[in-house]
Every structure is written in structure tokens, then in C-alpha cells.
Length: 456
Ligand code: S3P
Image 1: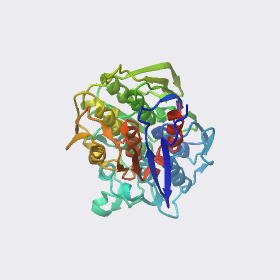
Image 2: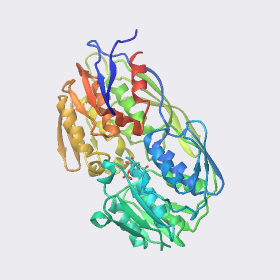
Image 3: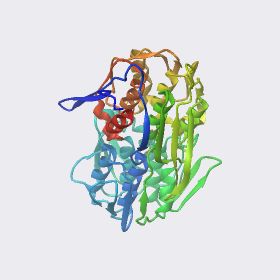
Image 4: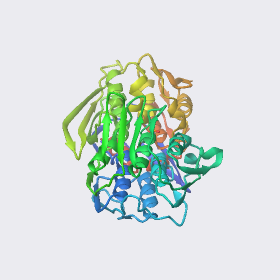
């Protein structure tokens, strides 16, 4: 039976307030969900397509604001990219080293991946001048993590605070190869250097302290780059200059978007959800490991390989019985963190419903995401009645206290908005999430999907 007014959206000017009021006797959460295309893979498909010779076709692209930013930047540098859609995007590549000097500032919007990966490409386009910027959030995120290794390669990049923050100006150069030992496990840092290495004569190597997502390595190989991976040392080497050839890319569903439904299914009594076509690349499945460690009932159905990436349907069923909550606390840290970095906000929600104290550590990177996700998640969930203490590198979450609805804020961070919406499904009364329009960055259909599965 449809549940009236569980979810409503109020719009004032450009801002949306998402109100969620679960019925007193609880929600019925069931159905099938198809999550949007993987954000990381979508960016890379557009970028490599733009740099390749010939045509690239992309099926399943994410239609969020972030990939639109990437497409607009590369269009401004001469790549022909059709209107973005989920079925069949066509990218007419311009060829490596052939990007045109844009006649305006390149704007990466909210997207760290667009800006950081693009910097490697721009820095290696000798003789051309580029300026890049982003929205308010992106302009406050650190860029020195990519500027510093690029400068070791000979890049010429300027900006305030020694080019630590956008806006940045880049004068492209012929770069020299380096072996960079990254102090952080970051796919954006790794990919930036590998992309700079594409046009650089010789072998450019990145070694990272733990393995971060490897979509760049997989896709660069598929496009024809000469790349070697040493899994023992977490090192990747690109032998440049490489030529790329247009490919047909199929983007799987984004496990980072599926994570919201996985947690919803794990905390809402009686839930039974099937999330179809989710990318389960092992460098991204830390959220499955964490939830299973906490006692969630998640199964992978029909595992398959789609265009070089592992894919499965994920089924989550509420695992509690009677008054017995299904989840228990755990400690998340170490090498697991890069494999679930974007899912920590929603895992914090799961932890508030778990028995015991969950510790999230080694995750200081969360402080420099689209928002300071440690501070924002702790504050916002505590306002709903949670017991979370911030650590410099994570959080301590004492689970088991019931949440209540109140007014909370996304801080314009898409993953915060969606995580709070999932918490609201189990909060008494009405939760109102301010600035919920942020969800469009990675999941434009989040609210309609939430409405549909809540209506049974
Ligand atoms: C991404 C890498 C991660 C992740 C981000 C997407 C990518 O960032 O948090 O959402 O596509 O390479 P870091 O490289 O900063 O860890």
C-alpha cells in the first residue's frame, strides 16, 4: 500500500529541502534499483575518448553534474562529444598531444576528479596555456598533491598558495619521467601522473602506499597505452609516449551510489532490495566487506565481466529478528580505507544502528573531500541523536541510540545529503535535509528512486 507523504521536496530558488517522515510503524522498503553509471569510470571514458584517435562510444555514462563538467572542459579543447545520455555517447577524439588551447577558463565545477586528472593532461601539452577553476568547494580542496609531482616532472603551474588551490594557470611543457612515491593512496594522484606520463618520453612510475581504485590502469590498457602494473609494490608504470585508440566503453553501475541502498536495506526492518548491474571491482568493494563484517545480509548475484570491469547484482535483506538489531560494531582502517573512502559517510549511518562502538581510523582524507566529511557527518548525525566523537583521522560511533528527525544540512556535499536521507528512514518524526540539490552531482535520480522503493 502506498505510504503518503513519506518523502517530499520543497524548492526555494535553487535550494531543495528534502523532507523524510517515515510512518510510526516503519517503512516497507523493497524493489529493484538500477543505480547510475560509475562516476570514476564515466570521467575516464570521456577523457581517454577525447585524447584517443578515432571514435569512442560510451554506454551507461553517469548523467550527473560531474561528468558534464568533464565533457564541457574537453569540448572547449576541441574534442567532439555528443549530448550526454545513458545509451550511446559518441566522443570524437582529437589525438594525444593535440588538445587546443581553450579561449576561456576551464571549469571543473564540483569535481576533484575532473580537475586533478585534467591537470596531468594539460601540464604535458607543450606550448599551450590553460586556466582551470571549480566551484567554491573545489577551490578550497588541496591541489598540491598533484602539482608537486607534476612540478618534479617539469610542469609549469601557478596559483595562489604556491599553486595549492584552484584557480590555477598551466603552461604546458615537454615533461620528464619520474618515479613518484605517493604519500597517500589516491587514485586521483595516481591517474594524474599516469596521464602526464602518456605524452612523456620514457617510463613514469607511481607507487602508492595501498592500492587505490584501478580504473585508469584498466582503461588506459584497453585504449592501447603501454602500461605495466606491479601488484606486489602497488606500482604502475606508463611507457610514453603512448597512442590511444577509440574504444567502446560500457560503464557499470556505481557501487558508491549502491552503498546508500545497501545501508538502507541493512537498517530498515523487513527491507529486501535488489540493486542491479553494480561494478564490483575489488578496489571498490570495501563497503561490502565492511557491511558483511557488521553482520549485514548481502549477496552478489550473477557475477560477470562487462568491458573489463567485474559486475554483479547485489541483494540486501534486513538481517535482524524481532527486537534484535542486525548490525554490530567494527573497526575500519588501514588498507581497507581506500577501498571504501567515498562510502564512509553512509557507513557512519550504519554504525549508528549497530550494537557497540565502531571506530573509523586512517581516514584523514575525508577532511578534504567535497566537504570535511568527518566534521559534517559527526555534527549532522549528532543533531539527530547519534553519539559520534570526531578523531583527527576518523570517528568513534557509539551505536544503538534511536535517532530523531530534525533539520540538517548537506553542506552542498552530495554524499552527505544522501547519507542523511538514509539515516532519516530510521529516525522518528520528520528529517529535513537542506541543500539536497547536491545529490545531482552523482545521483540525479536519487529522490525519485527513494520515493519508489519507499512506496513498496
Ligand atoms: C576518485 C578517487 C577518490 C574518490 C573520488 C573519485 C577517482 O579520490 O574519493 O570520489 O575517480 O579517481 P582520491 O583520489 O582523492 O582518494
